[in-house]
Length: 204
Ligand SMILES: Cc1cc2nc3c(=O)[nH]c(=O)nc-3n(C[C@H](O)[C@H](O)[C@H](O)COP(=O)(O)O)c2cc1C
Image 1 (cartoon, rainbow, N blue to C red):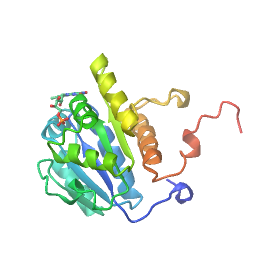
Image 2: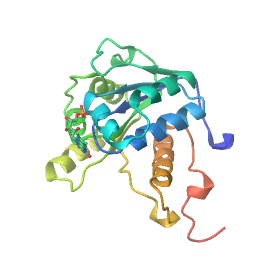
Image 3: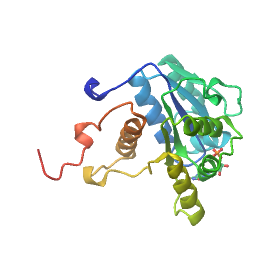
Image 4: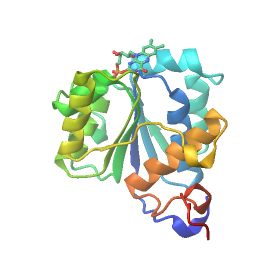
């Protein structure tokens, strides 16, 4: 990441990790934010940790230790509804839920704030801060689509984890890096995609 397209301040970004497939995306987003020295406050559901175990070589516990060491990084269990990010008075830049399960998408769309991830998302919407959902399900039912549309109408930005086909990406890592940049852009952490990720059919 070059410094020129970075517009960072001191306020943290909240990352909610839920139990949809795509743990790799959560790790890529948190790694990138910390590499840019953007403070991260993370919270993960129990289903997120279950999926992480299925999909990742690095355990969630080891990743947490690595993030704490490479901070600024804070973690709250998703059951901790007394955490600062449950309140709108706590200043944060915005929130991304990555990956976002259909259960959490439904809860966010309907203000059902029964865990810290869902409550922090509710706070982002009421405070009109950026809220990014990276949903993962396939195929999507009409109910999934309606919930995602409702969240988008409420102000959330919905970023499906799609590869940049125009970049002819070959690996999951490349796809995750691209989705990460899209999330950072929507959060306002960068003000443009890296040049190498921009679509330039017209050439230079
Ligand atoms: C291995 C595994 C993969 C899953 N993949 C998805 C998925 O891609 N999308 C989804 O919406 N739910 C998926 N689920 C189901 C969710 O984990 C489940 O609905 C859970 O209640 C979500 O809770 P949460 O949103 O609080 O994390 C998966 C579950 C498991 C165990």
